Image (cartoon, rainbow, N blue to C red; front, side, top):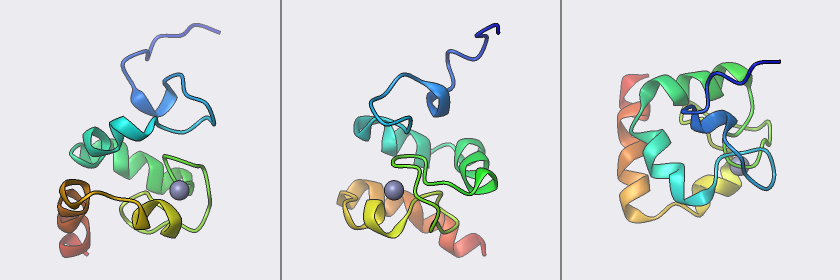
Length: 79
Ligand SMILES: [Zn+2]
């Protein structure tokens, strides 16, 4: 049980097991982390399972700021 990926926000400490709200933009700007969330099939913020290619569920997407929403655009265009 070594804990080697402390720099990985997907496994960082947070209340509900997901990424802290203030790191959402950081995740969205790193396609690698989003991809990992998508592969896991769970929202990277709240762990809900109804996610799309941004790695976020419908609920969390509805709470995105303008800046965060803009960061999701490339994921939709890539499809
Ligand atoms: Zn969510």
